[in-house]
Structure formats: structure tokens, C-alpha cells
Image (tube, rainbow, N blue to C red; front, side, top):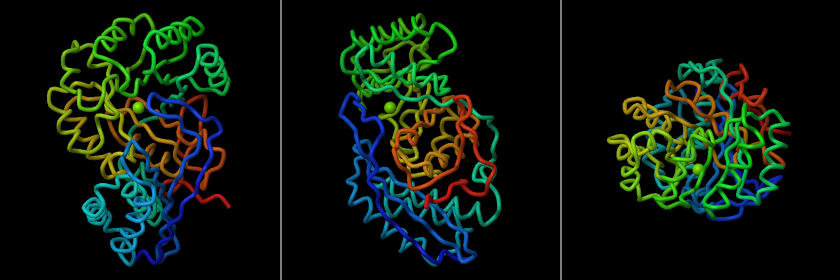
Length: 354
Ligand SMILES: [Mg+2]
């Protein structure tokens, strides 16, 4: 079997609900897609979401994806998956989302050709988990309104963006917890917006607020400052901007400043890179959260298949496709009662929308 054709294209997708985070406002997203085709007719789909987070220029990312797909994948046997994934990693380390798209497309094609899901291939061991859905930085009333809407849609877990004004952040969290004293999980993401004093203060208040975790309070580069927090506080902290690739993971695995790692396929180069991080996390006793950018169901499904095959997976934050007003693909998973269920289909279980 060989990969006989490669197709790559870009789509600009508007969001149903533009949002503000500590660093910028987001209203549309440019996604790059890849479709491989095996000589047996099986397709392999992938999606890249280059963003400022991964320091990728969208156009250069597309160029890297196109070149790597043609030079490394076209004409090759997809069953040589690990070797091809290694070549992708060497070819475009500075374009992790391009690498992620091609890597997941390979896994998809391989799984479909073998008739097994990617999660089964990787050794599925997790039952469906709830995903959080994100509330951006909003005034208090709008925060409460949005929470109400998401809970009515069945979500059980809210991720609240913080980091512009600590006083307002606390008011929003206190109002949310008062409105929902039980049955709603609340986690928060400061996107590097806090000082060490604010971080420590939020940890002290986290018990009353019943916060599940605190994501990236300090800037990337201030990991050593995190070590000044108590061990209990560190256990509640999740690394996002501080954790991109396996080199970051190596630094964060010894004397870990964060008890939780937020793995995103776009940061670490796809399923292959994510498995490397997950193995290190396992050795270091670190729990895993699986996050995303604004992405197609293709790459959200890829993250979910991988997440359900990793023993340290505890948290899902895979809400990135729900706010796209249009997607290039369908399927992959269903949302039932706030939890993400994989479809029992070969590969990633996704197909292009017609
Ligand atoms: Mg984050």
C-alpha cells in the first residue's frame, strides 16, 4: 500500500462567538487541511491550526505542510508510521501544527486501512470524560449568562478565562460559585496574566471556590517562580504556555512546578509528540489535561483518541470545534451529557463535509 495522493488547502472559518483572552481578541480562524489517499482508497485527514501560541506564520506553515507532505509522505507505505512520523518531526520542528496535521492524517489513514480506531491502535483504556467549555474574559453578568447557556446545553464543566484584572476575576468566580454551589466543575486559565502573589492568593481561595485547576498563572519563563508555591498549590497548577514540546517537558518533569500538563496536538506536533509528553508525565506522576485551539473536529478527534489511550489522562478541554460556525469535516465524536464519546469507527472516525 502507498500514499498515492496528497491534497492540502486552507479555510477561513468564522467563530459563532468571538472572544477575548488576556492577550488578544479572536473572531475568525484560518485552518489548513490535508487529505492523504492510500492506494486502497482509504483517506487520511488532518488539520493544522497555526496561531500566535505556536509562533507560526499561517502562510509559512502551509508551505511547510505542503513540502513535507510531498517530500516525505507521497509514495510511501503508511504502515511505516513511526519512521515517517520521525522524518516529519525532523523536517518541520518550527511548524508544530503542520507536523500535527500530517502526523494525525497518517494515523487516520493507517487506522482506516487496518479497520481499527486510532484509540484502539494506541491502547484505549479511558471511559468517556467530561470536557470543559470556555468562557472568555467577560463582564460579570455576561459571564453568568454564558455559563447558564452552556449548562443548559449539557456541559458540566466550565473553564473561565482570567488574567486581565484580578479583582474582577475573583468577583466573577465568586458569583459563578454562588450561582452553582454544586454539580458544576469550574477550572480557570489566567493565560500568563498573574503575579506570583495573585497566584498564591487564588490558590488560598481555590478551596472555597472549589476550583478544579489553575492554568498557567505566570508567564512562560517564570517556571522557577512557581517552585516558590507550596507543593499543594503546585499540584493544582496546569502548564500550558510553559509546555510546548518534549524539551519543555524534560525541564518540567524534574522537580515539577506544575501538577498537570495541558497537552495540545498543535503545540507538540501531533499524536506522536503527544505520546512522548504523556510518557514523560507518567514517569513524573503528572496528570494530563488535553486542550486545543479553535480547531476542526478532525484534530479534536485526534486529541481525544490519544487522550483515551493515556493512563494519566484526567481532564479534557476539547471544546475547540463547538464554536466554529462551519467546519470542513464531520463526525469523530459525540457530546453526550457534557462528555465526549468516540465513534466506534476506523481511524479518527471523521469525514469531509460535502
Ligand atoms: Mg491555556
